[in-house]
Amino acid sequence: MGSMAQQPRRSQLRILFFKEEGWWVAQCLEYDFAAQAVSLADAQYELMRLMVAHVFLCTSFGEVPFEGIPRAPDHLEKCFEDGERLCLTHVPEFRPGDVPEAHVIDSIGTFDARVC
Image (cartoon, rainbow, N blue to C red; front, top):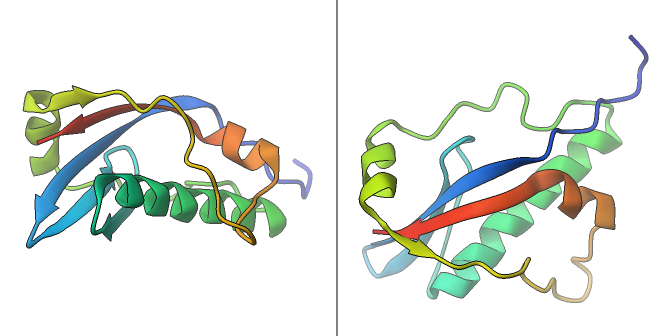
């Protein structure tokens, strides 16, 4: 095994959006990553920004992205299954200064998003 980090596998990640105390929460179910914002679009942006930063930092330090990150709490699975499917047609546009390398975004995968 070399010192180079393995590239993360592309997969379909399930993202649950829900409102909590006036905020939109975006919660990844495969990995316990969550973000909140005033709007659903901003919650999506913040979650993607968090995940891209995680992948970028892991690969920069020779670590495997998402390794050891636990799944989201089990009770969110039912909410996801009962939720209404959302169509996330694109990766959110990153603001100036937030632009990661293209391979970092591509390595995260695709999304199945629902709102409950």
